[in-house]
Amino acid sequence: MIVLLTSFYSAEALMTETKLHSVASTNDLLTVVAPMKQKLYADSFSIYRINRLIKDVQKRYAPDPLKFALAGYDEAGNIALRYTELSYQHPTQYPVQPNSLLELTQR
Image (cartoon, rainbow, N blue to C red):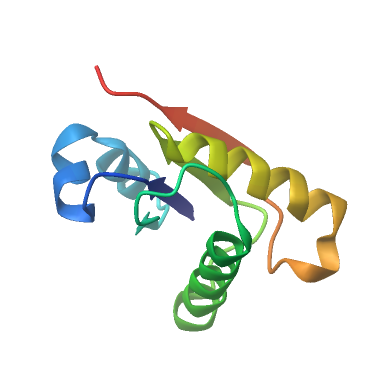
């Protein structure tokens, strides 16, 4: 599973900017796009929102937790990085710890 965070793009607009979802699908990975509502850092609301999203996806699709990547597009990369750090510092408070971290930038 890949969770792709974005700060300023809608999910629909982001899909035209990257082909990550197509490559992921070819490799049997689910891609979830999560707009962070113009957030630039991982505040408590952002963390709550990501945790809730991941728990929902786990419940619906049961993805392999060992194949989990968190990605951030542009400014949302800051949120992805901090979320990953926190998930390893406090693993009992997070549904999964990303084993891959990607930061995508506009070309």
